[in-house]
Length: 210
Image (tube, rainbow, N blue to C red; front, side):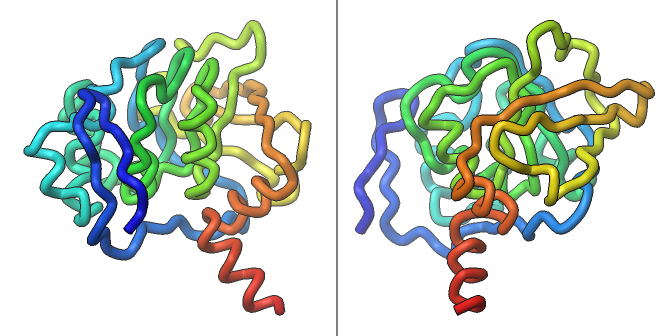
């Protein structure tokens, strides 16, 4: 039994009995998708995934749990993500603020979210995203994330080769004909995890290689 983690409202999220974890596919080429959701700065933790009984009963069912993700911000988010087969989120400062709730990252993976573009990340949430293969990318100074709109089609070209330590990534907004730069602080090992679609994928790849 894994340790319990405390939810946003001080309630306990217990990890016992959780089924197979959702996984992202490895990154083998340019990532392309739409902006599925726009979020502001320092979003209240309860708006990511409420910790009440209505949500808690789905902790072992990630497909059902994902229906509640950011529903307090946009009730159509989960349906939109599924319709598009995943995509990107755009956030503000301190993305992931609040107590650690690992189920948020897992719900994002369940919906196929491949990258989050934000002004800054709370360290523990950034670590959860990377562990499950989600790119945590920061806007370069002077870049205005408000220029990205819901439904814009984005691509991150040159992957997986261009994903290297300390190397900025170019992101193209195909809808508006714009390009901007994003940064990351991924270590070499974290890059291996993201390329493999998460830690589990990296372990599987390492075992196959051995």
